[in-house]
Length: 206
Length: 206
Image 1 (spheres, rainbow over the protein chains, first blue to last red):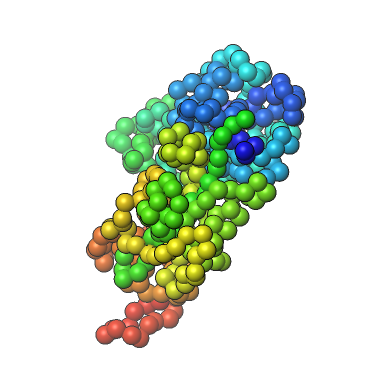
Image 2 (cartoon, each protein chain N blue to C red):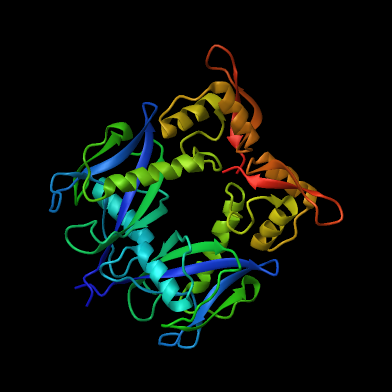
């Protein structure tokens, strides 16, 4: 009988202090004891992959009611010292207000800026890099900021999301031209009166 | 010990007679004996998922040297009557010239138009639908026709690829406006002299 096992791992991303952050737990068990890792664990016999990801995220971090998307399946034969473990990775970009509950299986769930990640267990660094690449690619053709922004937002607010995901400062004029040309957002007839001069409000087209 | 097993399945797509086709084999073993299915099989202990997909495709259809991309992992607990079998699906869109060799594990590998698929084994119909959706989505923001078209091609040739993938006829003028606006193709200074009037040649920007 095969010794092969399947896990799920979750890359939960948020924007905090204008920088992309990732939720990590600290492993209590071997292998990689005390090392930081993505929330995740073994898929149970009777549950789908999606349900396993949602359950592990809730058990280990207290985060609930998140719409997870499947990212990629990592199956290098040597990625886990325990034997052949294939992991199905999930990801989501959530508002920072998402509260962290008390984890039961793992401790110390906390947000880390992607620019200063501690050493991670297994191939989790590779999984994080893959998730970051995916949301970067999605910036150009989807409403990736949806869920992070209010229904109506200024282009400055949208630019801050793009800058956080890309990890770099963007030219304001180029950003505006490109984002409107792509047809991802549409101007409303409303203006925001906060800053020094009023800013037009936009919404996502999809 | 877990009875869980992992397979790979491959959705190989091509365009033939202006219509999207999929490569299917006929199953020789139970379950779903004699039913058509995607080429695929169990992942071996010492091979990566990518290598398993390439190997199964070659063994079952003779198709070699194809760049496969991972599509999605299907893990419904009841998708396989043999027990818990999670499958990692791969896909590729290849030129029709791709020859089919003699299969060793399965017989009768053949291309089927997606509009007239026979009943498929397991949840393979769902996997095919997912692959079709993926390449439809990719039409809008990638050079999905790359590999299917020569290095330089006319917009009519590109439109034929889009029409085959979408399964519908497109308005010529709208198609041209949209494809140029998206920045996916770029005009060359060369013209093709075939048809009644010369047609400008384009190339992909990426």
